[in-house]
Length: 337
Image (cartoon, rainbow, N blue to C red; front, side, top):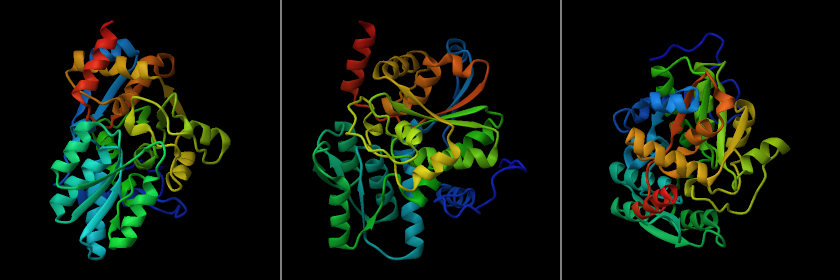
């Protein structure tokens, strides 16, 4: 295991922040043997096109197809160590839904998932296949948190939030800890941003293990709530963004994640749907790896913002790989034309 830099952040003295390195270390022990240690990919062709040396942490190859398995397992298993419950409830557009459904099956509890009506069909099907009950709602008019919290009250279930939870954040941060064990000398770390759970855990781990690293978040151009929030110094809520990156459609960053982002993230870059599709297509064709639009956002930023990373060593989290084949075909046709 990598030895922390002597000038790294203390194990957990900033108790006003929701997650610490010690929380991530605990999560690593808890998920060991359950979560995959995903590979780190490198492509000389990508390096040449980007003008940087880039390493990809392939969480698209994680169980249930995304990094979300790490946080869901850490959350549910830790809560089982504290108290008894027979059901968990989550709300998600897809990746968190699948992760909670799979973890619940593994750990022997019932799962009820609140999903939007327009959730990608493969994500909906996989969630049901893992044994979860699914309740659907209108993403643009309904309130998934209200629905989920009502079910929790009525049934005495455990709520498993998708991002704004210390245990979920700590689980997510284990991916970056693994990345830096394999490639310790990174100059930058790029992470897709939605509600902020992945980047909060990732940045906490990165800044502990390599304090000099620069952490950037990446959002869709139409979903820039975190960029706006950092500029304004407070959480900004936007309409649910219209973007192909369905996993990055949260309209407001989390209450617990935002202070961590303010402390540890230097900048949020914006990428267009076209840039994500082009990078997704290139990665599939040249590297033979499928990454969904939400998961490819960081790679798209490196590929289309070359001046920011020229000559540097960059780590990128490929956060998920759950993509409807029909949508993939549409994207590839668009690139071909």
